[in-house]
Image 1 (cartoon, rainbow, N blue to C red):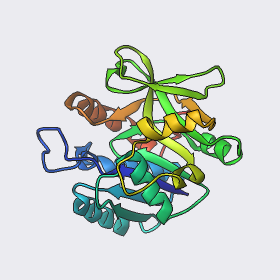
Image 2 (cartoon, rainbow, N blue to C red):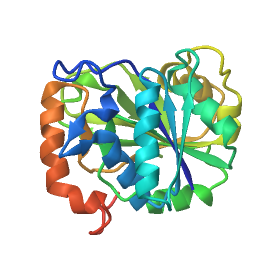
Image 3 (cartoon, rainbow, N blue to C red):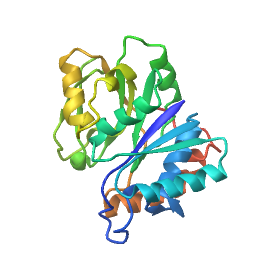
Length: 246
């Protein structure tokens, strides 16, 4: 299976690492992207495509190093010639490596859940056009809220609001027919452009609340928490223990 990791954002806003993209910030002794890659490997992905923009050369050098250590993994880096946003970057990679569906993750976060049963369900549910993975989060102010109906279908993305809410974990399963519609020569957002359009078109997008720890490194406080969580759950990420249940 193939996973696309979005690592094309700008440089880190963490003062200690001004010359690194977020995914290469060291966490628990390794670049955070190492833990993302290990998590995907544990979930059964043997082909990982990194969509890179800023600092693409650093991402490429890191990927070459990891590929030399793990020959069973096929790692590719696709470099954006201009910022494409989450949708444009995902579509560019999906067009390069076509398959029936695409698993898309942000390179600066991990959801400590076993998503394999959901992936299998999606494979066998042709009526579903996509899945968004979320989680309940006590401080949802930094993240968009997911609004769902009684069948757990996505109704809307809501603006960032304080309090405990179901947040978007930045992990998506999408039919490639959806990504094939996206223009890849301009900046486009999955969250702000594509999902609202797909909902209006009647596409069936299910939201799965994993109820699992969410690791994010986009602020100094969340980076500190990520250090603690990855140290605590290393064996799950590495596949030495059963992952948490989605």
